Amino acid sequence: MSAEINLTLKVWRQAGPNAEGRFVTYEANGISTDASFLEMLDIVNERLIEAGEEPIVFESDCREGICGTCGLMINGQAHGPQKGTATCQLHMRSFSDGDHIVIEPWRATSFPVLRDLAVDRRAMDAIIGAGGYISVNTGAAADANLTPVPKETADTAFDAAACIGCGACVAACPNSAAQLFTAAKVQHLNLLPQGQAERWARTEAMVETMEAFFGSCTNHGECEEACPKEIPIDFIAWTNRDYIKAKVKNRKLVG
Amino acid sequence: MAQAITRVSAPPPVRSEPKIKLPWPLSIYQTAVGKKWVMGLTGVALLGFIVVHMIGNLHLYEGPLEIHEYAETLRDLGTKLLPRTWLLWIMRIGLIIAFALHIHSAYSLSRMSIAADQRYPGGRNYIAANFASRTMRWTGPIIGLYLFYHLADLTWGWFNPDFVRGDPYHNVSESLSSIPVAILYIVANTALAVHIFHGTWSMFQSLGVNSPRYNHLRRYLAAGLAGIILVGNLSFPIFVQAGVIDDDGRSIVEELQHGAAEEEDH
Ligand code: HEM
Ligand code: SF4
Ligand code: FES
Image 1 (cartoon, each protein chain N blue to C red):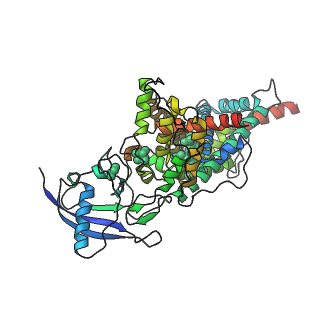
Image 2: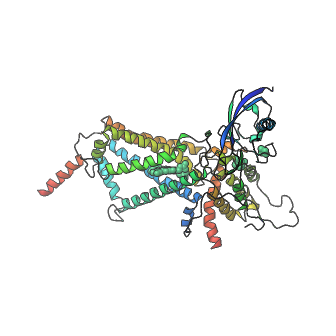
Image 3: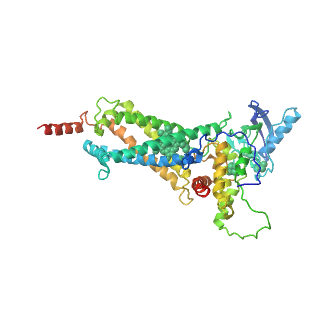
């Protein structure tokens, strides 16, 4: 059953990276409960444009929870109140008539605001650039199943590989630590045979790049709750272990 | 690694490279995950101490002579191999180092996190974080300050005019019979238990001890340890206040030593 609800939005508006930001209140009336959260913002923006005002800048792409582009702090929760979904998968039926909704950008010093709700997430790209890949020489594609992988290992690696790189884990973390993202990206390769050659170098490089930009994990567990892919913090523990091992091994191998 | 990857430009880092690169293995401590690992290891050492210390103190319930003998036994540890009190001092030095590293890593990682955390005025909704995990940066310093008072009071005897060296029963009952001191002990040891509740769980993650088969046990262990420490340590101020531990201001150890001295005089 679709219904229409009236909402009061408190949205973070910031004209640019160096501008002063502030909350602006908007009335969003007659919103269908079938609308997604982003569609609700689209409606508000259309009305703003009609009224000759600047629309609210926010990011999105796939709108089906697979690209990791969207991401808003909704009432102090990354991706809003629904568990295991991205902002684009949140629907207005999760809210009630008369609700006040506070919408903020991802919070972290290394996620500076570009404009309004859009933040610069290149610090996460830097972590991937440090080792979130395997190096293979090009040539004919290898036969499928040439490298056997136990089913359990493949499943676990796939759980980690589900990370869409949205950054909700950082935004949800009181320390602005990027441990869950980094651990997911490290472990989905470290668990598989193809990732072994660069395992220790990867772990060291990615963790140290992460540390340059983000805070230090204190094991609150907020990231796991916020993650739209429900990636468990077990990967963080395994990455911590791999990191200490890497510190020992790299010395042995590199001298 | 990485030939084809172009360097990604990113916002300025919040944490700068160390000015002096220390040699391995000290370089591990210059990284955040390495520091956290040291924090976990020193946490285990401190936890071990806290548990043994609490259990040892239960000798108070046997009586003044028994706790005195227990204290002497600690000083006698290892005397077959080493001069008297050496082993005790080795353990004390180990604890002091662990404590210093624990505090330094906590301080330095907290600063790093505060620098990384951009706050917006909207507030945060906590879902997984609990009271214990959110108050680590408060309970830690409370324990540190309390520990200083505790040593000054019961080891060095600064605050107690009736202090008798080597008579724990007398000193404990003299100190904790004061209501403000008893309250201080109760508050500080509650903070310790809260710290241990999060710390015990957290250290498994930091040290990378994680196996899905046993993970659920970590919470029970944390709750169990925190509970045992809480009950054991709070019992001392409570039972002194209740008059169960009380030597009426007499120091039995002092009297014994006097007796022994007089006998020697004869
Ligand atoms: C002797 C008493 C203490 C015990 C048994 C203890 C135990 C622990 C343990 C087991 C951890 C978890 C380590 C990890 O996650 O790897 C921890 C973390 C921590 N400790 Fe202590 N600690 C003690 C004293 C202190 C003191 C005196 C301070 C500060 C002045 C302190 C500050 C902290 C902080 C800030 C953390 C990090 C919190 C977090 O990771 O969430 N601790 N402690
Ligand atoms: S771990 Fe989860 S919350 Fe973090 S970036 Fe990946 S998908 Fe997003
Ligand atoms: S827009 Fe792609 S995950 Fe939300």
